[in-house]
Structure formats: C-alpha cells, structure tokens
Figure (cartoon, rainbow, N blue to C red):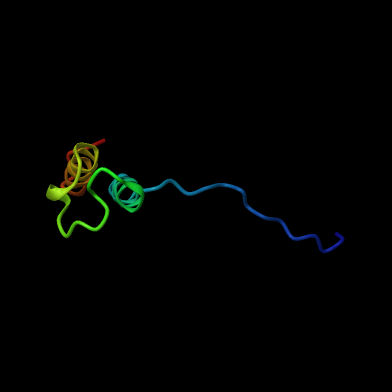
Length: 64
C-alpha cells in the first residue's frame, strides 16, 4: 500500500429533535418578520412558531 488515507464519506443521520431545533435557530437568526431578537419563541412570526412547535413535538418523541 502507498500509505493513502481512507476517508469515510458517510454522513451520520441527524436526530429529528436536533434537526428541528437547528431549523428553528437558523430561521430566527435571519427572520425579519419578528423572530430575530425575541426572548420567547411564542413571540416570533408564524413560521417561527410552527418551527418551534415541530421542535417541541420532536423533543417529546411525537414527531417522526
């Protein structure tokens, strides 16, 4: 062998709860409709509230 390093390109699956939280977090950083800078998710825009609801369901194990 020439000493070449074998790299694994397999991406690990993201947990549904972490994915939902990441999507909500990314949304709040960019949202100009009211999510950015709000202390509570309930005070954000409709999309932000929907993403937060998805996260809460995933956290409780109710989302697939």
